[in-house]
Length: 367
Ligand code: TRP
Image (cartoon, rainbow, N blue to C red; front, top):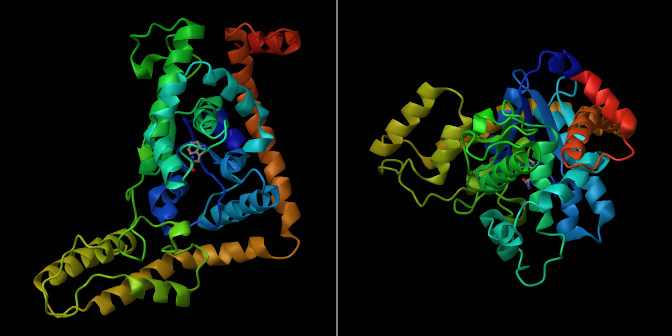
């Protein structure tokens, strides 16, 4: 089934995405990617590569950003994003998103944007509090535009992104109220019925909101050097899992199943009965060593990654660049159709559609 068949059946839409900053790891998998792969059959899915957002911190590195954007696409396809069913959105290839960012930015008080906790954290962690560009905070508004340009119902994300989704919901309500006469008291799920252009989207967090890294302490992150990448070899996986520090030395000592190792057990061992058994024996200290459990976890991670490695090899093969570029272009055309329609309606609602008679007539007759 193609994305077009899906849209004719009007499945609810999903949009989510990643900023291209390098290879994806297991934290991305359990936090969101796994959800995305699963949801492809029940939703019309749009997966966005936020290459414009990458310029917030690397405006001087266009080559690197272009390379990372392709890397992330390969990681997605390897992970099971199916280009026959879902649409890949290269952000820079969809101008409607940029225009919508401008319009939404007028509806959000500057101080409201700067109070967004995800944005605040990021500025602090990156040491940019008093030296970020003018454009940096704009990416958070841009993220609202990414979502709303597709009139999205559901946004599967990691926990850290929920503050952005909340801001997106706010600005969607405000837009519908300001330009579409939707009563501000309208319940969120009735905005479209009430004449709003935008549905109020909902966030959806994956089963593991925050996967701990192999240091056993911090959230898994490429920059902290504690990540298992989707492209890691079996030997790398084994070595990294073996590093997981638990502090337990005696296989007969009662263990704490809230530790990092057991987060991995629950995240990656597929058989619930085996997970329960391991938990039970670990708690009681029933002759079960951490080394043994780590080997089993590494095995489970390999089972997950093996088909990804295989698919990835296909896209890494020489001559594949053109196929990937073609894919990006065809998918951008689909994305431009959907977002172009949104923008047509937005411009009309905002009384901006001068010189767009043809488009307006087409939209009217389409109603
Ligand atoms: N900010 C997100 C991240 O870095 C990426 C992103 C951009 C996104 N636009 C989005 C996520 C829209 C969900 C919806 O992870």
